[in-house]
Image (cartoon, rainbow, N blue to C red; front, side, top):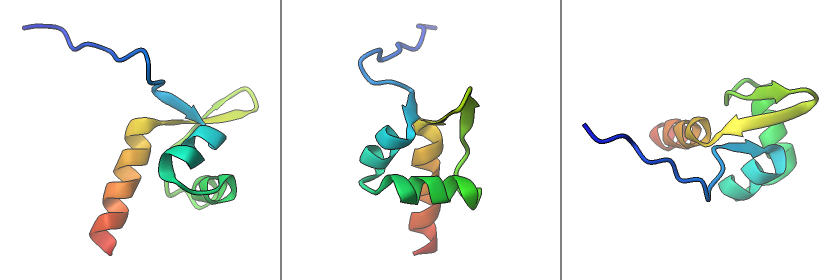
Length: 66
């Protein structure tokens, strides 16, 4: 079975600013998702980062609610 290739050009973990760009929103909206526990995040020191897969899952859940 061939191994899955990793795209090193696109980072897996996104900062708050990168997540906002990825979602087409503001940084305050992204922070509110963390505060309201609507999307999973990680803390690296004082930095909050997001896995792109978790942001994609959030978008899919929101689509189902619409």
